[in-house]
Image 1 (cartoon, helix red, strand yellow):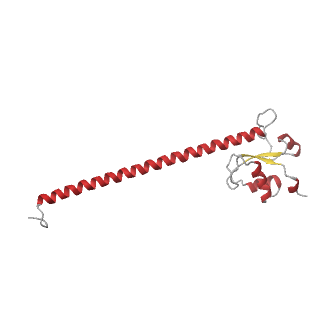
Image 2 (image 1 turned 180 degrees about the vertical axis):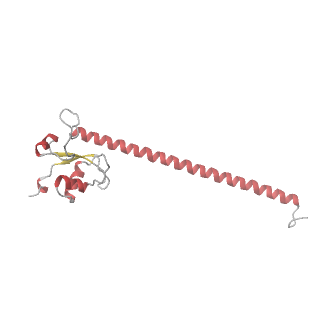
Length: 164
């Protein structure tokens, strides 16, 4: 019996051709998906490498700043001893830090430039936190993005910002 005027043999041949075409399409789709996944993996590797490079450059800038503001012997100053509040430097000790620098501040979770300015200068307004940002321009690219562990130098207040 013929199906729509076609012989049984022709119908079988058409099914076979359709099956082969379907397999080729599935194979092409699988290759495309594999290529997309490989591209995603390469992009992720490139992003990770860029982040590592950025981190290394930031560490290099931080090291240069620490070197610039380290003691005369060239060694970095030790951290605060027992009973000393981190970030606080008495009036007599301020001169020992470095001329023009009143303190070094290590960023902790929750810190903002405004909060740091408030701690050292008593005011969180823009001129005060901008002073800290400018003094640390090698490590602070965006005032809204500071990271835990970064060490900032806290400069002396210029005369125009000193409170009367």
